[in-house]
Length: 417
Ligand SMILES: [Zn+2]
Image 1: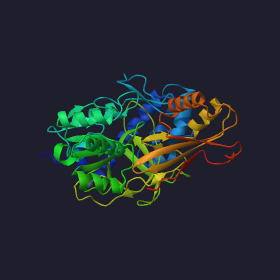
Image 2: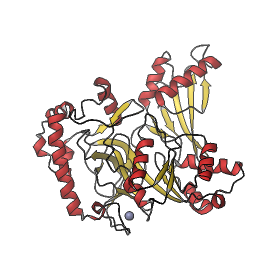
Image 3: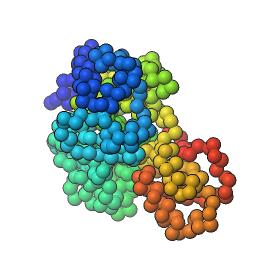
Image 4: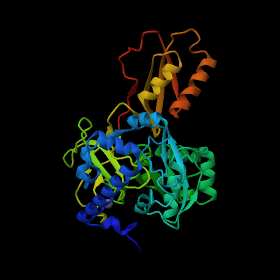
């Protein structure tokens, strides 16, 4: 039986670096020719594309944050001029911002390494509970599952009752989605009178888009007999890292160059130190170099007992900026500002907390006008909020005029991981 998805996973560090440096150098040269935005960035920084030969040379380039990418795409929709106009694009995804991403290619092995490492293969029937519309998640995880030969049930964001039905009727063996949603499915199954462990065959779960809390992982594994795996990526750059059976750090995908940098300087921090995860995906379609994820992590350079030779990320320690993820979705200060403007510069503040294993999003709003708080007004506000931020509000707290100071943070994250 194959031990790894492909032989790249057991390359020596030297071989991996040489091949990645080669691809990077080719990508920058091609990007300079095809993407006028990349050309402009390199020219502005007085960088000759031929001088980017190794991953160390990337430090000469600025880090592009998600906010910066949104700004660039707003100036020049849809891809900020970062694309290769000569390559046909398979699909276009969006994520809140809005940001548009040309799908790398349906032939790409996106997420397949992660599923392989989690032991998913042709004998599995996998429930893919990620959204299939607009965002990249559903279809890219689907593709990855197909690449390892699994049968996919594209259940998307159907209700937990439907998911339970599918797990039961189709004898589903693996789950792909967020950990909190799996827990609601388990709770729903209990409500419907089933014993998740005894009545169902679901024994593996691959999670993304949300941190997997230790207590929750333990519950899945001990109480329900589900072997759990974490996957890490970003819509803008695809899959970035994945957990192997050792469950001690996430192996960096072979198609990406990951740097851990000091967010203030953009320079790499010494191996093992905490910094921002900055990703360059080696490809010929979208020339986004040094994408700053805003996530904090550190690199594990010691060899992994699983035999894969790639370095690992030691999980995610938090967020660099003020943007936070609520139920796996980004909530950024810029989105909140946009909403405030739409409602007459309404002073507002988002507070994110936990209730059990679920994220709870509360909005604090100042009653600056009498109609604020009326059911019709609230309905309209919630609808606009959801359109801009994607994520749903759980609670609204109306506060007196002047309660939210102009210099206070737009998002307060009270969760403790
Ligand atoms: Zn490993």
